[in-house]
Image 1: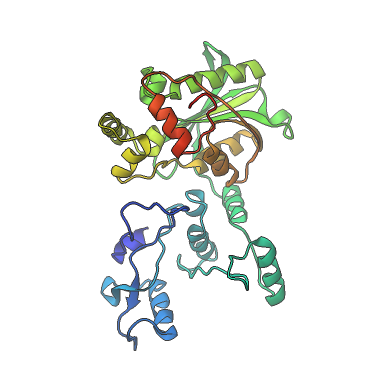
Image 2: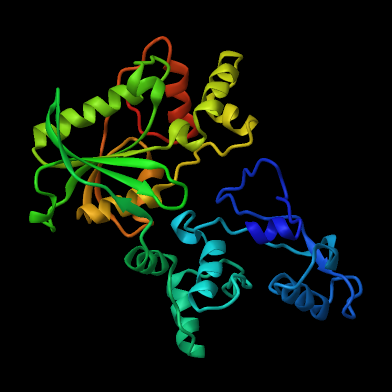
Length: 343
């Protein structure tokens, strides 16, 4: 991201609506160095070399062009489990400049090659092959994203828990884990887990605009009944957009937008949450297999991308009310939440 800023490579569109939110910047061509229109193989190769050269200046690149740069997120695959981040992470882990060329391999019929076909290509040409999951597992094993605080007892109206605070090293945000029972004593048995993003309005003030507070308390009751489980409480207000923009989004919803439209209007994705931190907190506690308390399929995918096994989704449905019915319907229809009690 920092290098793209230095080179003046802004995003191709303000609101990325592609399926995988692939982070394309403006297209570019190399200026000079014998390059002409930018179309030839030579011109394209020179452009790619320039993008990976730390001495390249913004004035060395013409815009628009014929090469599509991609902008990797800071923290790499631990922030976004994508090919862009994997490319940069591989270069960095190899001790090289953090840039690389990303190429999709196609089958003879023009479809994108999947792992079985890629394994055949790797064997045929004696090429090493790894997956994004491999990279994530390696980085989670060798790097620490969070600093763990001291553990204390936390009696609650739902029963006694233990609480451990965590500080995120990259930005200082503080998160917490509420733990019930001995998590590590039965490592092969899945643990009941709720990964809950903070919601000041719902969790603290009892807002009726959402179902967050009720879900948190319901999850704590479920874990107390089970006798063993974890609530990871992530400091990611408003699905990661922060309190200021969350309240602004409320205003936009009052004026007719749904929650997704409001986020996009404020130049955010529909969901900005980072599950990498939550995954490492769970790993630090000793969770490897879980029964995930959620209605959100993206949350499951997000955690599984970081090497955790979700054995089963456990639904946590709250009855809609007159204030959050539209919000709940939006979560079901536009965000894919499994909500059987919402029409």
